[in-house]
Image (cartoon, rainbow, N blue to C red):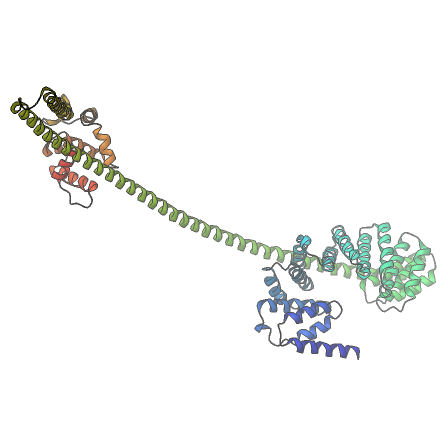
Length: 578
């Protein structure tokens, strides 16, 4: 009646939540999961079409479904559903649910016999242990790791995980969880032949366990005490185990321990009775152990025929157990091989993926470098063009200023000459009209104007003297003769030096106007400045007169790109402005 009311309550809650988001239903399912996993399955069955859910809700649905089925001992057929939950929570920072998804992925793999992949997922959780606050989950995972190592008979590695699980269960005051872990540690210590330590853990497990689990611990403790020949304690514990209503095969196992006790204490008839009862067990291990001790009894009584019969039965059972173990070992090896094969494929896929990523990254880097290079080259080109334009503008301004100054000087000289003539006329015609002081003042003005004219003419005269000196030099003569003469490098250098001395660093100013000149272009400019005829220029640089004309035209258009160039314009520019 109580369960029916609870189910009715669940459907009532579900009905209320059906109009709202599924998150409320999931939160309620999480709260009741530990006590009522079967009710969670009922609750989840009310969701009609899982495919219509959002990605998060679908992941939560499959996580809760897997957890509830695990707790109700429903054997899984594949790990595809829990994988959906794992893939979603791997993308989130919800560490509690992410860890739970990993754990149940491991549980499903373990139930499917894939122990190594199960171990991988348990270890993933334990590697992030500091981010998880669910002590119950961490305790179960450590205990599961211990059970996996126990299954693989690696007992010494199982115990540390079980001790860690025990710590988490102690924090939670979970006596049931503690009792199971203590018992499992005792079994592993027994397998390692550490009997005294095993007894300590069994005694602790006995103190923590509930009434239902006491008989099995009593039986195992009795067996250990008999093995160390503490027969009174062994007998007390087996009597306590048999005081419970036991079912097969635990009853036959308890009969075996009692029969072994009677054999060790030479109570032969009782030993025969209980060992024969235990030999009827459905467990091969109990049967084999029973026939072994029966054979030892017959050997002690020198009953050779019965000894041989029991010994043969024991050996047949022992071989069957060994065959089962071998089969299990082969299966484990096959699983290990399949695991490594799958890991190798994954590794190969990762390597290919990483190579593809590196290749793509290299391509992206190459594209970025190319773009950066183009941008840098464009910027540098722009800056260089801008600088060239600025230099050209400065040079044009300088040429305009020089031309203006030259005109102003000529105008000034002309005006001064007129004033001088006027002053001379006044001095000659007005000797009576002006007194001595006025005459003296006019004479000084005349002298001042004459001096100013001489100064202006001196600059031109000095430049002309330098030009005359250059035209009378040997190097000038060499480049003007029309004989078949080819100048050497030192001849060209001498010409460049002479032009620099005559025309105020001509080649330097030339390079400031043309940012880049070839050797041939530089020589053409210098020959034009030296008034060498085009035909002679062609002979000196070993080319045709037409090519010389093209060079001069192209150079002029470099300086004045907006104008159409010509040889004559270039020659005038070089001779007059440079």
